[in-house]
Every structure is written in C-alpha cells, then in structure tokens.
Length: 534
Image 1 (cartoon, rainbow, N blue to C red):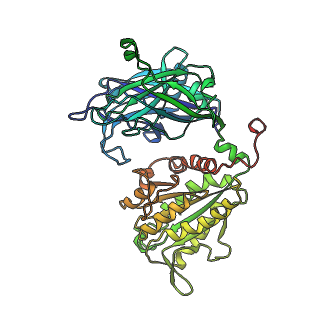
Image 2: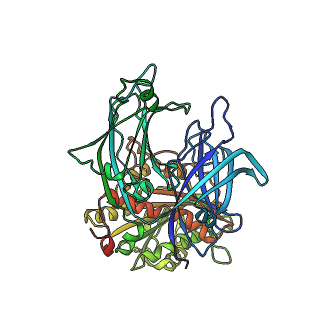
Image 3: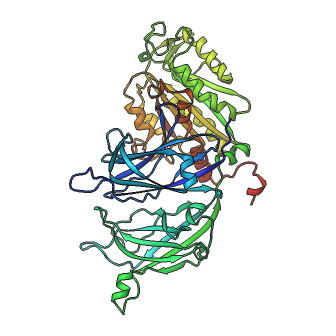
C-alpha cells in the first residue's frame, strides 16, 4: 500500500475570467478533481463561490494527500454558479487546468492558462495555484468584533466583513481567511473561527499579518473601511478579560485629512492556539468504527427471480447491492477489531408471520444480528433473499434510529472510543421522508455517519435532498442538522469505474465527519501519541 507522504494545502486564485453573466460579472467557484484511472475523475473538494468577481482569490483552501511514488493527475475546473444545486453540470464552465500534484509541489507556485477544451484557451484567463505542506496540526481560534466603523452605505450603515492575509516569503500578501458579512451594523461581532496555524502564518508567530475591513457590495466592488497590520504574537495577547484593540486606518483618508483618527476599532476578544487531532490520531488512539448495513427489499426492486430485478444475482454471482457492500465494507472492516457487523433488511414481508418489517436481521436472529466480516454479510444476504417477499413501503427512519440508539449509548460514555457508520443501499423510492429528516437531525448530534448508495436508474431526488449538499438539511419543524453526516452516491455513476472509485467517493467524508463530532464534543483520542500529549 502506498504511504501517504504528507498533506498539501492548495491556495487558488484566478485572473481575467471570461464573463458569462449578462449585466454582471461571473460568480466563480473552483473544483478540484483527481484522476482515478483512465478518463475517470473524482471530486476531492471545492472552494466557496465568490459573487461578481473576475479576479477571485478563494479563501477556502483545498487539501490533498501527496504521494511521492504516484503520478497524481489533478484537474482544476472554474464554474460560474447561477443556482443553489450542488451539481455543476447546469453551471457555465469558465475554463480548467490539468497538471500533476508533483508539478505543483515542485514549483510551489504554478501559473497556468485556463482552457475551455484542449487547444482552446478561455480568453486571457489564468489560474495560480500555491502549494504548502501541512506539517503543523495546531489551529488558531479567533473571536473578533469591531466598533464605530465608518458608515459607507448611502441609505444604511455598512455591511462589514474581514479578510486576513499573511505575507509570503516573496513579500506577496496571501488571503488566509474571509469572514461572513454582517449586514447594516457599525459595531459587528463576527462568528468565532479557526484556521490551521500553518495556513494563518506558516507557523511563524512573527510573520506579518494584514487585516482588511470591507463594506460588502453585491456587485463585487467592496469598499475598504480600513486596515491594520500585526503578528500572531501580538494577536495572542488577547484574553478573556483583556481584548487587544487595533485602529482601522483608511490610507486615503489619513493622507487627505489632518484631523483623521481612524475608521473604527477592531477588537480581538480572544486568540488561542489549539491542537487539532486528525482522523488517524483517533483511529491509532483506539477509536473503533462500527459498521452496519441496511438493505432495501421493497417491491420496486423487482422480483429477484427476474433478470431485470436489482436483487437478481447474475451467473457470475454479483449484483449492484453485493458490489456496494464489498466496495464500502472492504475498506471499513479494517477499522473494527471484532469484525462483527450487524446487517438488516427493510421493506419486506418476513417469515414466519409475513408481517412487513423495516429492520429485520438478515440472519433472522434479532438478538444477534451480527455477521462475521463482509463475507458474512454477503452470505446472509444470499440466504435471506429466497426466504422473504419484497414488499413496502420504503422507510429509512427505523434503521437510522436503530443505529442511533447505539451511538447515543456510546456518546454518554464521553470518550472518543466508538463511531458508527450506517450504509443504506436502496433503489431510491423513500416513503417516510419527514420521519427520516427528523432521524438524521437527531443522529447529527451523535457519533455516527450515514452513507446512502442508490442502485438502479431512479431519479434519487429525495436522496440528494437528504445529502444536504444543496443547502442545510432541516427537520419538518425547521431544526437544522448539527453537522453534515449524510453522503449520497448513485451507483450508476461508477458502473464502469474501478471498484476503488466508488469506495473513495462514499468514504471520503467519513474522516472529516468523525473528527468534527469529537472536536465539537471536546473529546481527545483515547490514547494520545507522546508528542501530542498536553
């Protein structure tokens, strides 16, 4: 197995993007794709969208694992985002650039023209990619507010936001964080934020940091309210009882007016350095991942005896359900020492009384629904298939609530020892959408993640809705998820791709989701390596 050498952080900016919007500038976003073999590309990450901007500097950094011994082909795509859908196929393509990660890390700063297709440049557009190795796992957490900011809007006050920059070794200023906009407020208090120490100041506490305070304008022509410079050493002096204050200075006003004092005061309420634990810190520190499978046995799958059925096992012994179990389970089983996996079916009539069940054990032993390893799940599935009747409706909430009960029990122990992953494989016709939304909102407060793989050719609109990529998923009562825990992938997108492509796509979010839960709960890994012990 290839050894991950290091994590690399990519900062993206573009210049002279082509204009696709009538009457305004484009709203660009950058997506990072990695080649997974042949013509298959999988999305690794994407930046935020910047409104009305042809020369964007993206605040969100793109992280990628760098392997010295692999040629890692990557592609950067710039899109003009005109809707809320996560899918980029309905957005205008502003150009892309292909290269290898090796080219980026060896040049540190790579500048390439954006191409609409091979041999066709996107006007004079260029993309600049800056690479930095992540060696330090600490983060800077900052709480900041301002008071008496200058009024910039003719009819209102100002809509202030902050941008933090670090000075690179070449002297150029590089954006490291952009805050949210606070509307119509001259005394704003921004949300607490965390930035990796490496990103913030390259680990150098005396490196110059510049902070700009702007008044947001929807057409992209933000007005500078003022700015100041400092270092992390100075910012760190901010404590609970003694904030550090900086005068926000507008250079033009200072030059023109002798009586000019400042354009407001920016106050750092707190600035702390915290240790950020990685997924591997938790796994190597003793955290177990508990894997559960839920399989859709509703009538819409078709009669298993018919070759058209999604449950029909082909002459070579496979179908989409079995392939999905192998792809995901094959990776996850390495993180569970006892290799005993609960496996359930839902939506079928089960013997002996032929009542419809939404969480029956595949091995028909409700007291011990465990299968030995992934092969055990496969065997139980094959044995259960001829013994049940496919029926309906398609209810997800019982099986989500089933796993959530175990996760809730682990959460009460207040240790980072157990995390739960539920894989639901379905043909997509969901009946209890409202109850499922509530179940997911409840589960988002627990140590668990949900993977949904859609098999067959259905639309899967409900699954995409549950994934929450188009916006924050909320319960019927309006309660939002505490964190994003659902990952949905349609199997058909990976039918001709290598098996690893599917497992990478569905499992990519799990490490982040696990870390975000334990971080929010304030739980450190059960056993810490010496260098990370406080």
